[in-house]
Structures are given as C-alpha cells and as structure tokens.
Image: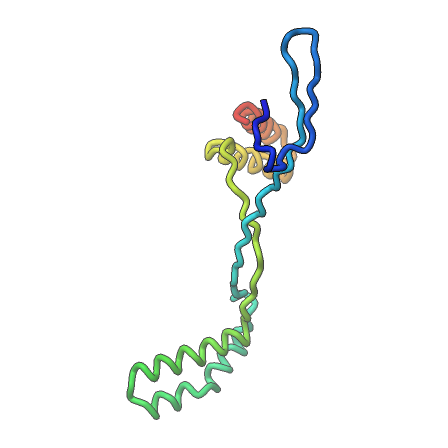
Length: 150
C-alpha cells in the first residue's frame, strides 16, 4: 500500500501486477533523496616529521631568552612563549586539514563480531608468515567461527 498526498510528488510511477489469487503486488518508484553524508573537518600536525636538531636550533635562536630578562610579568612571558612556540610549530609541523565522511555504525556489526574478525585476521597473518599446517588449522577455525557469528 502506498499512501501519499497528491501534492507531494514522491511517487513517480505505480504499477499494479495482477496475480492468479486475490492479492496484488504494487510496485512503485519513489522520488526520495538520500540525506547528504555528514562531513567532519579534522586538523592535525605531523609531529614525527619534525627535524629535531633544526627545531632545537630555532628555539635557541628565538627571542625567548631576551623576553625573560625584559619582563617580570608572568602573563606577558606566557603569551610570548605561546606565540613563539606556535610560530615554530607552524614552521616545522604545519597544520593540515582533511575532510572525513562520518559513516553511521551498522547495528548488526557488534563488538563480539568485531573481535571475531580481529582474531581471524590475526590468525591469517600468522599463517601467511609461517606457512605451517598448525597455523593454517587455527586460521580455519577462526575463519569458521567468524562466518558462523556473521
């Protein structure tokens, strides 16, 4: 059964298929747009790519030492420290932004299914690296238990 208002324009076409019995199949195409995916913007820094000797050299050559001797106000020193360190971080590890589509979690993929899948992949990696029959049997057991749970 398809119920809609005539002004909504949701139902594009309706076909009624006759069968031998007193039941009928109603097939229709609905013009309903899928909601747009949620997009999240993530900003991060690649701290591992920082050249530590150059970073240390830039810190030692910065004007942090002169700022500590010029001012006795703790707030001014903290502001100066934050500005100098953020400038150096932007130089050595600039902020990178990327957009990530947030996918909704599937209700059928439970935590126990996730751990069974993890165990299966772990057994598979061990079998691929060793190529032993014992590890292959363990992999088959993990695979079968995952498939049963799935």
